[in-house]
Length: 478
Image 1 (tube, one colour):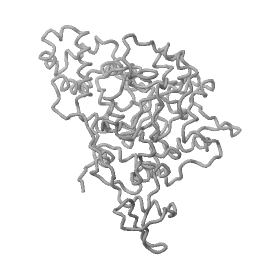
Image 2 (cartoon, rainbow, N blue to C red):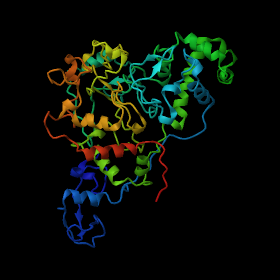
Image 3 (cartoon, rainbow, N blue to C red):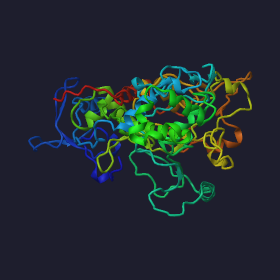
């Protein structure tokens, strides 16, 4: 929603009320009666500037649920999978490639849950005995096809000699971070981390992403690529490699492994199941669905820079070239979510998962200004997930929205207390890195004791809107 205020429409429900030009309205009816509001019509009605109470105005604005400015979204083409992608689909669903013989890629990235976790566990179990606990819940594999490589600062300039990340990070030190506000264009040339795959962006390509779980001792637990290649040589679909790569591919273990990862990559790129864009919100954007009153209110709160401000990071508007919104800016934030003491790794009080500066990512370990930062995930299909944030501390959307709503104004409702009653704020990050935590962007720009940004009813409205982002809406038009 990067529009100049002068171009905003007075009847666009995606635009926060305070940013819209005030319409002239004809209001009919007695006190307490039904009101009709016709703004910007042919001019039949003499009008006076709007002075209706806020509750009355909400009733007026929510009556339709239609998008007054539908757009024609441009989705990825849907076409039959190539032979390589079909091979990748078989590999994706093959549990025999794991050390346990029971875990496939789909075991942790369930297609029925938008390629996210298959259950509500904090983290998934894996390893050769399927008893080893992972460090983080699996992120969704959906809607990653437009994710750029990891970088720090602008990525739209071609450079034959890329600057090393450490050098970019050093350049970024001391640079003031721009405040993020829904409805405002992102500041240009921001030296902030963005892009990449996994919670810490440590891989840039689907091929490299696929390799990681294959070798991870807490996941598919192969000791080397040669273990995976040996299992591929015994797979029922091994003959499918030959028409694509030649008959000798099965006798070249390293090449067989590499091409298997390329097949997994093509499956994620080509299959429409990874980027469906058929949610109720997508259909509303196109004028094919109506949102309920609660969903409309939730959308406004989501986009309101003084309320939810969710759209500051979870971009909600189509791009300039009509690509559907991904509901992420693919940047990294230190949110200070509370420590999940249920995790096996966290039984060690000296263990901290600090995202960009470790422990799984090691190349930025010395760049301590990034400690505690994790990738902003898409909110598409967030209602289908049963686990949230990098440590799986929360298990429903109410807890998630309450965290944003209460973290600063009522920290005692979010963080643990010691025996004396003192709140241990930001307890999952060493104190020396607390300066990295976002306290500038709404709704985190408040102090303890301030009025909370959202009422209980408004929290429920935002959740109602988030549910419109689930794939699988049956649009019927009207």
